[in-house]
Image (cartoon, rainbow, N blue to C red; front, side, top):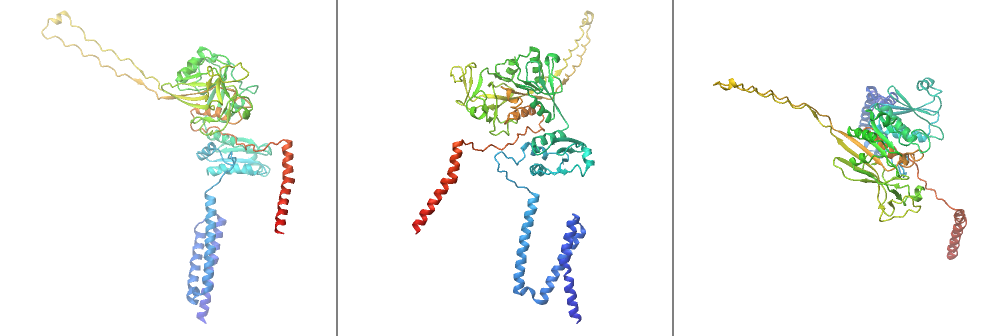
Length: 555
């Protein structure tokens, strides 16, 4: 009886194993901490369960039974499936593999956004003060969060957390704020018609994490593009520079006669009148001391910059760039060249074969100059698709082999030049001449030796580190005007040029807006009616006729 009771006691003790294992798992999952207590429960449960299985098999030859072997195989198969599923879930949580099959990559962050988030210097959090969580906005924020653990986001109901809403100064639903440390910034206000924008979020993120700002001066006084909103103005371009941490100010060299020292880049956007000689010299001096200049020169204008451009090997062609290939696409006629070929340069490296167009543009002629590195940025298609037209008064543009120039044409170029200031050295001191002997001294048997010359001081030089000057010349300024700036890659050409010129290599270049391509088929009324008849009448009749023929043959 005692032996039987002892066996029953061991049998009941072995049931602690299956109890301790789920108990340890529960403690660990609830506390979210796999410390000593949950691990002790799990290990003890596994050990007790193992001992119970061994003892049971020893007492009853349990392992030799056919039912035991079948049950063990089923249990092992089940555990294997669970282990595989657990491994898949772990890998899915740890590593993200996504495929964006849309042509414009609508659900993938731009390379500039990914690079900016990956190198975040400190944690950043996006606060969305809204009740509704739009799936499109959440997907965008999730894409950001996948790039770095320093990026977080959270949706907040302003009514349930009024203190937090007051802290950010929330005034309405849909406001999105960015916070990093003690810095906060409004990104935008979202609603049903306006979703969260990657362009705005990345721009605000760059402003918040980048403590430095660059100063961009826009030359005025010669009929340049207007900076405030108006006809043919570049107010959208100026606003976009502000979004990229640039501080913009107008510059009149006729009043200052010198480019300010804090100028990271000077922009000359479409001057209609020539610059004074002193203004041109001021720009040359600015470049010679390591400055950066963006020139956007339209046809039929003479800004009197030939002396400056000649130093860099650039000549403005007075002919008009004509491109008949994009006439039906752009809808602006052959005088608006459509560019799809870009140079291998940081400004255009991510453009691929995207579109940008330049209404009323002039070609550029580039010649090699020692010390200047030139890279063509924008090139038109080869002849006969494009050429440089010399007869600007003709209503019918035709190629004239005697006067015109065959394409491809260069409409933009980026140039850089190392500037090494000359060393300023003190002049060498002249040696002190030895005194001539007097007549009485010459008659003495032991003449006095001449005095040694004074030591020559070594020249002192103030050498400076070599700097780099950068210049971008574009044969058009219309592409950056309001209305055209946001179309295709036009804005990217402008913003990327200014960013590269400012020599702020840590700043990401412009982000192109992603728009789904229009794949709709436009049908006339006749074509639509024909399609309806064919789908609702002709095709069913054909199918019915085939069915009747098959039935008749089988009959």
